[in-house]
Length: 290
Length: 250
Image (cartoon, rainbow over all chains, first blue to last red; front, side):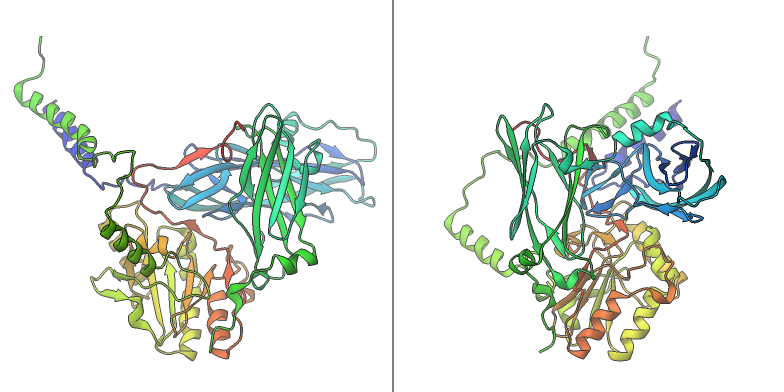
């Protein structure tokens, strides 16, 4: 008994020491991936969703496609498509994480990603196999890279009328809708600022999550509102020399409420050439040698 | 009915005392009303603010710093003027950081920059504070020893001061300083975060040095870095997950 208490006392003294650092987890987090077709069968010409789920162990998080201050995006891709037409991965609404490195965006717990897959009109009937591949960085005090591949079977039939699996409905609710779908909401692009305004709902003011586009710098959004309307002002500037050939766009999310399935809206607005000239600031790409 | 003997009671008391120590040792809370500094103090503060660079910016002089490496040797950035200096934010506990060594990316940088500037300086800066300092030193040295690259000094920035000065976000996060002391590149080491592009990957660090030597614009001058977030000290606050951005009610 005395031995146990003495050990506990020594341990407590260590923990109490200023500057003592808790050890980081040493084992690889067991992030599990499952994939399934959103419906068991599809007709030629039909678009269906492939749903890939990451089960992220408690305390860990992985990152959104624009991870913020640190981290690396989670990637979900179709590795072997067998002639299917593959759309861009749909990322669910991310959560915000504040840590000493800054603000980042990502996911905890069970997270569903959707990949639109279109069966070509000329696709013969029968079974198709698709291989999905995911890569992620899972962090909790320390980080681990992870990847997995999963095969799924998809039946192609002209006569099928399969209903989507029940999980698809929840997964779809978590995907941000286009901002244009929010009634009464408008977005305008000035030379140095994007302004979004719209009616205030029950969930109050929105939060803003910036998307990352090379050569486009978004400063902190100013969010305000009165009893009936919200206003989001996002200052931006362009650095064409850092665009990596990508056309400038202002991208981001507006989030209402706190839950993953609460309403969220995505926007991606190209910066027209006229604004590119006016808003352009490119101090980094001056000639560096005398 | 006391089941503990005096020794046990003493040990238990020590334990309780220890658990209460952090609160007792914490600095006294500051008054919510900031004290108005006296006029000379205001002057000093102003001068101090004018002299110190806020944060590193591409196209501007790289802020000077002084740090000791894992062997105890002091390094001052300004002493390397006249040569290219490459700073790598480094954490051998991060898989991306290990990856750039395992895949020969750092070796390639050394080889190619030496061709244009044989005396160039490569400094790895470790701002990791999620492990005891002794562990960070041993881990850094052992890693580079294993990679046979122990000529790279690992500068210890345990309190994160230099990391924050340069706004280092990830490991790796690269900074290139030209011989005149101007920061000419800040960002990702390559465009190959999955390490699957082999020879087709673009190495932004090598590109920046080559562009600078040729007298052409360094473009891109900034690329979003990838990797693990820098594990800065958090002052015990830890990570805070939040559902969304600022304020709820208008």
